[in-house]
Image (cartoon, rainbow, N blue to C red; front, side, top):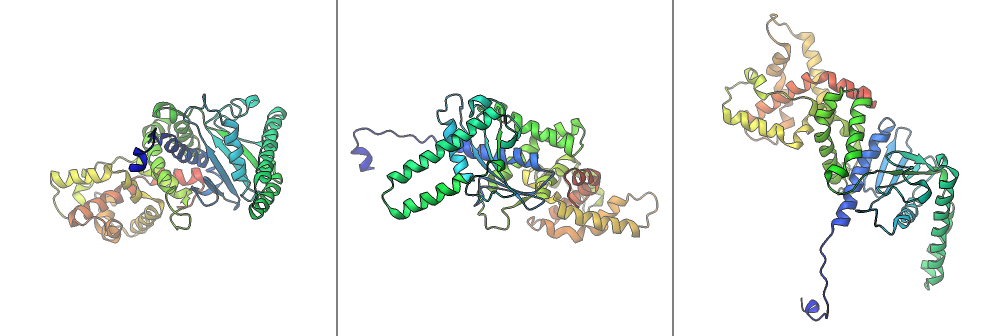
Length: 376
């Protein structure tokens, strides 16, 4: 404190909103890009050791994306510098068979290509000659900056490192370069997430083949779930087994959000008579964002396979609903999924609710698996 008091002039600025905006953009850019590549992708990482966004494709190749943003791009003075920083970072990644992608929220990074990259992914090879010329100039300017740094560096070891980097950068194969801009992306949620929300809606309608009404009904909650998931993923160390968000991990919440069963629908399957307190507690559990976890494909597939076997053996009297018979007789096999619930009655209730939801939602799950090309 005395150091601050001894200063003639102190300026305190705790505003970290620009950094927070950048992290927010990175997560949403990850969602945007994963939806773009969903048919060819296997998994995604946010903030990997390799790059801001790293997508693995079915053929084993990668999309390495560097995300740059500006809170107010209309007054940003370093638009081209952001691109230069990005290509320097991307040049570290292996280029053969991979895509090196610059994604930003700045539509006028290249003056001659204003809006040319908006809400799409464009390869360098697909750019018009004038755009290529401006990109080429940015590369040349970056090389000159590296050369100036080499001349200023007095330590031989660092100078040699810069020389080696310059040679590597000059070998940058621009045929592997791709550019994308998410626009608009600024201000509050109403403006910031317009294009991300539209991408989610397009995915649900065009890839999953949901009705537009169904897609609209879950779009916002799905986007919020993905945003939380991707923001959390950026905090996980890359060597962790949980770092990869697989395509199935990404898509199973769609099925979970499509079903809205009332928990009282299976009250006749319980071994006890539920009162209002426990029913309300079950509703609270179902309303929690993390509840969708229990409808992931791995667990759902287990339930559905057992249900299929049960149907072959079932000998009902015509009046007994097969779904509820399965829930009543087989639920104990799935209790361990809900070991985090200590109350015995609550655990039985929630287990049976989720079994009913999964069975009821089988058709939607099949639609999703076909839509994105995964096996369940």
